Structures are given as C-alpha cells and as structure tokens.
Amino acid sequence: MKKFIYILLFLLPVIAVAQQPWYKYSPMGYMWMNVGNAGFSEGTTLYTSLAFSSSGQPYVAYQDWATYTGNATVMMFNGTNWVNVGNAGSLANMAEYISLAFSPSNNQPYVAYSDDGNYEKVTVMMFNGTNWVYVGNAGFSVGAGYYLSLAFSPSGQPYVAYQDVANSNKATVMTFNGTDWVNVGNAGFSAGATQYESLAFNPSNNQPYVAYQDYGNFGAATVMRFIGTNTNWENVGNAGFSAGNTQYESLAFNPSNNQPYVAYGDWEYLLNTTVMMFNGTNWVNVGNAGFSSGATQYESLAFHPHDGEPYVAYSDLGNSLKATVMKFDGTNWVYVGNEDFSAGEANYISIAFSPTDNQPYVAYSDGGHNYKETIMKYDSVMVGINELKESRLSMYPNPAIDKITIEIDEGQVPSQLSMMNLNSEEVLISILIKPKTQIDISNLPSGIYFVRVTNDKTVEVRKFVKE
Image (cartoon, rainbow, N blue to C red):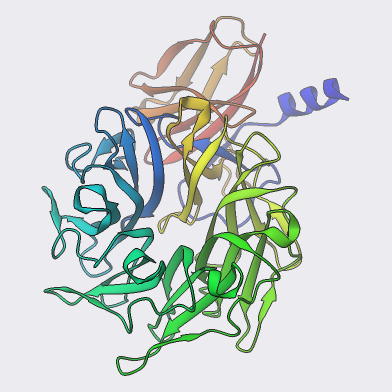
C-alpha cells in the first residue's frame, strides 16, 4: 500500500498558476507551511498574539526571553523575513497576557499587556511608525490586570477587557477616550471572579461583548454585552450557559450573520474543545460538543472572512501538545490539513485570517524549535483552475541523490524557492537570481519533497524524490 501511495504522489503532475483568485481546488491542494523560518524569534516566547495589518502583513507580539527578561517584542513579516517593529524587547519589563490589535482608523498596531514594571497593572502602547509610545498613562488600571483582551470599536477607539484584581478578580472593561482610560460601565461587573477574558465587537450594532470563565457560575462560560452609556453590562442569554466548567474562552462574531460564537476547553467532555453560538435566544452547540479527538488547551477562534466558516486552533494534549486546526463545514467539525501539524509542542496558539488571501495563519511558541516563535499558514501547493498549459519550471534529476537543478524562464528571475517535506516543514529557502540554479540536497533525509517557486506573476510547484 505504501508503495502505491509513493508512486501516486510521484506521478502527480506539476501545476503552475497565475497569481489571481482561485475558484476551485485540487483535493490535495493545500498544506500547512512555515511563514519565513520556523523558530524565527531570537529566544523563547510566551503569550503569543497574532494580527494582520489592513494591507495583509502578519504581525506577532510575544513575551521575549532572548536577552530581554520577558519584555514584549513585536515582529512583522516583510514577505521574506521576520523583522522587528521598533526595537526588540522595547515594550515594558516582564509583559504578560499580551494582546495585539490594529486600529481600523489609522492601521497602527497596539499592544496591551500586564505591566510588571507598574505592579502588573494594564498598559497599552502603540507604534507610531518610529517608536512604541504609551496610549494614555502606563499602568492605568486601579490594580493588577490579567487575561487581557484588546479590541477596537469600528470607529477606532481601543477597548481592553481583563481580570481585575482590585475588584475581586471580576471582569472590567476600559476604553481610551482620547485623553484618559475610563471604565465601560461598572468596574468589576461580572457576578464573580473571572478568567480567560475575550473581547469582541458586534459588527451589527458596535456593542462590545466579553466572554470569560465565570466563577460566579461555577466556572462555566458567560458572555456579557454593554448596550449603552447609561446602562450596565447585561448577560447574553443565560449566565454560565456551558454544560460545565470551562477554560481558554475565545469569542468571535460570524461575519455572515453577526452571531457571537465562543470556543473553549470543556471540562464536561474531559477538556475536549466545544464551540457554542447564540441564536438570538439561547446558546446552542455548533456541531457536537467536545468534538476534538482528545483534551485540548489554548483555544483560538476565527472566521473565514467570506464563507463565514468558524475555525478553531488548539494545542492537542493527546498528541504531544501539537497544533491542530478544525473548521465547521455546516455539518461536522473537520481537520484543516493534517491533525497535529506542528513540528513539536505548540503553546499560546493564536489564529487569524489574512485580509488579502483569506488564508488562516497560526502563531505559537514552538517546542519543536526551542520554544521560539513560529507562524504557519494553510496555503496552496497545487491548485485546480487557472492551470498554465506549459510549465516554465524544470527540475532534474528526479529522483535525485545529492543535487537537484532548477531551471526557470529568464522572465521569472528573481523568484523565491521554498522546499517542504510531507510534514509541511520548510527545509530550505532560496532566492533564484539566475535561470539555472543547482541546489544541494545531500543533507536531506530520503523522502518526497515539494518545491514551490514564487514570483510576481506565477506560483509553480513540483515534487521530487530524494533517494
């Protein structure tokens, strides 16, 4: 059987595509692949938060344990490499519970964090194009703030939700009015102590919603909303609506119908992942409750921008804590690519969709690369429609032993070459500056590899066998 699969993969034809929207896909058309190098950060990372600029550039914020004693660092991918946004480690000493978001009014990145340099109070900073600067006062919360979640109103006003130590660990939301940070409704508005705050705005009425683990309701999930300046926070459906205790709440709105969804680790199902949605009256399960194959953590929920399908990323406790992404296809929860696709343990997972190509990206602290930062995207390696009749990529010999030659047209220079194995791991990156280039593959293990050549006009993919 293995020999048959090997032959089938080898015989699959080269596919070259013009870089334009695609409308149907090969059944084997996509795989998880690294964005830049795996483990690109200088050192170990924690508290990963991923977001996109309006132009489609991925940014990631994290606690940086290179030489910065837990300071926050933000990096962006410039199309070739991950580069620092401002100075590395320039945001605070010991920044925890980091949350990154972009202002819709000026497309500038903002970062909220628990600021150890200010008694673990909440601080928000923004990058003004040159430096990271404070938004209002540093450490503006009354007391320590944990489990931060930063979001913007449609008008561009920043809001931050957090566990408020000064108010018995209840939930508090604050907003910056242009001069000061002020409470949204009452501080500590939840019924009891909270964890895992997740903040999002309802796009239909611009109201802020916050989800959390609610110890006022035995650790079940609760969602509340703020409906006006002269009112307080109110429950969305029943408080504590989940079947049992929860963790790692992640809240997002479906762009197709503006309904709120919440993903969480579900103690009722031995910490398997559950997703629920509010149908206007009640919270109901999306597909089966506890649908993951085993226990999970670090749930992160996002929606496909066009078709409204919910995607949830998590760390799979049943398989060495590797990263897995699933989506709901309208009937069932199905895997997006391979289950457990990361090279090793994946912590502090954050999922987001690119606004330019609508592909999901996942960021995490990567145990397969010394717990440095890795970002992967689910992208095409073989595409169905818009195939070019004649390939302009030549690759030989195939099978190969120690070297392989890549030939492209003169008009395709320069191109970027990336090589991946069947586990979606990028094993080689190169820039092709000549029509004919010889690549040394002597250090690669025997197996099947994909070669992807990209330029401003085409994407071409071939596969070869390393003997």
